[in-house]
Length: 111
Image (tube, rainbow, N blue to C red):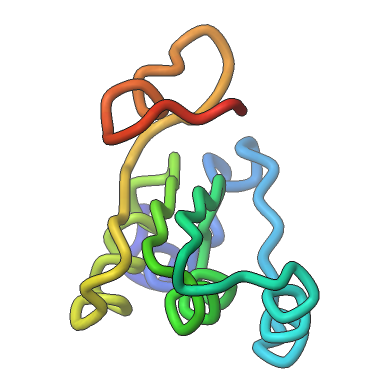
C-alpha cells in the first residue's frame, strides 16, 4: 500500500470492511446529547473509525471503550485521543463468533 493510500485510508481492504465515517462533529454532539450520556455512563462504541463520535462521547461519558477492527484507524484513534484518560481504544472485532474483545475487558456487555 502506498504512503498516500495509508494516510487517506482509501485502500481495497478498507472498502471490503464496509467502512463509513461520521464527518460532522456537530452531528456527533447532537447524537451524544440526545442519547443523554452522562459521567455515570460507560459507553462501548463499536467501529470508532475517525474518532469524531468518540471525542464527543469522551466529553460526556465517564468511560468510553472504542472498538476498532481496522489497525490503521485504531492507531489513528490512539494518536488522536492520546491525552484523554477516559477513552480506551481496543483494536479488534466486537461481534461474530469471536467476541473476545467484549469478554476480555472489564464488565460484560450485552451486544
